[in-house]
Image (cartoon, rainbow, N blue to C red; front, side, top):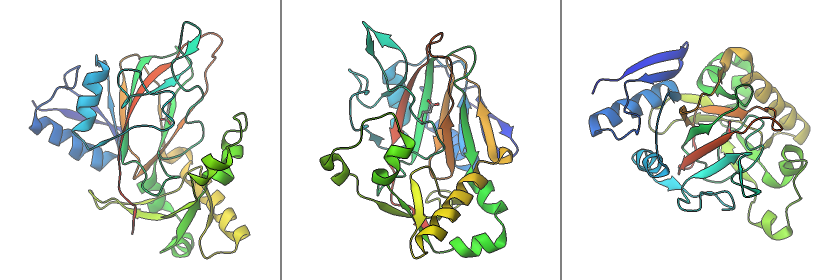
Length: 282
Ligand code: SIN
């Protein structure tokens, strides 16, 4: 089957036209999807009708799947599916509320971050609850030359311990055991995609400062890079419809959930997450 990939915003993102609603595709079609995903960073599918098993089967063909930890919001029968949103059953939350607010890439706070994620909208509010995606290839290319020189060959420090209270002010603090399980990690700020070779800025909300730079200077530069990457010209806003799914590449994009009126509306999303590999310095 020939698919069409309709550009979303310049070189960034594409809407996939012509895929079957359950995404049970042959190898040739899968290859087309994967190639477009590497080229464009995010792919939007519309009007899908997938069971959790369909979503898992499709995602697994792109790479091994990651099981989210803690497992509290993993689908009870399909632990590969992580549930996000404010939906409840019998007074109990089905998913994690308020997940993903603030630009980030999945797993950036781990030594081996996640390669990609695939988010499927089962129920979305009529307004709000959009997801923003930033093109980190374009952001890197547009950085001023002196900043490029400053970050060349350098690694950022990504700290769950330090950023938890800032990123999740309403959540309980981590226990000493939890903190010990999530040590700081260092990643190249300029990353080469191991499959496409594309070079991007690698930064997100768990980054604090920069190895080898005085802390003040490093944290100011991290803030600058974060703000730069979020400039409107690099960002695509996805306004969800029921049945949409977005496949994003964590190696060269960032994303950010946005709020909605939780007293009036329900948002229920299923995410599968791909294992990754250690980022390569460009
Ligand atoms: C996420 O960060 O994976 C969740 C994004 C969203 O729910 O919009």
